[in-house]
Length: 237
Image 1: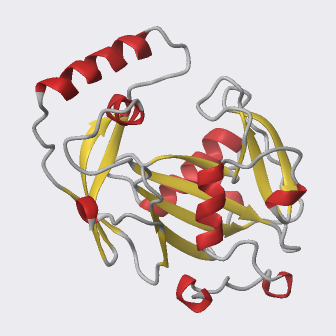
Image 2 (image 1 turned 90 degrees about the horizontal axis):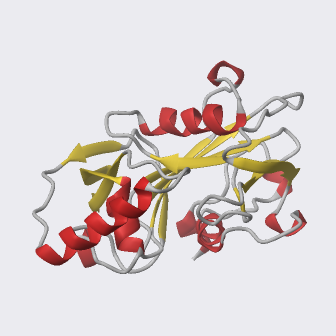
């Protein structure tokens, strides 16, 4: 397995809490240091980029993810074509809000953001070291959609998706919501929201990486099982 993360895309439905284990940040060579400095200069002139703390995964063993702390500039430097000194991508969270009828809340990312204008699941963002992974997904829902945590119940399913390269580790949280829930999107991050059962019902493209992840977890799930759990990835192979 390359960097302990593999070369494909693997989804696992978690039956226990995910453990995030911190490892030491690796040393960087001169080439990466120069590229990182250039990225930070570019970010300094941006109104939408913030060099916040992230976690970069290096290995996954069962329910344990080894990662080191870095900042968002490291992630952008890798996306710009300079390999990280260890690991790949970052640890990210995504929230899937689902009504009793099986419809999912989708958001169209603000045009000025990375991958702006494409559709994504209800909310998504980076994991902040020290957070509970599931609660981090709900935090994104509050920040991007104005949905208070106390309006949501316990998650119906929690998935860990490793890949596809160059992505790292994404925790997908599927959460039921009452039919009367009204999101209040943050216009700085979200241009539009819609309820739809499948990505094909949306007026535009779904971010291709997210579509791959959703396929791996068996979405869209059978409408007759909308109130239950989707099939395990292993059940579909």
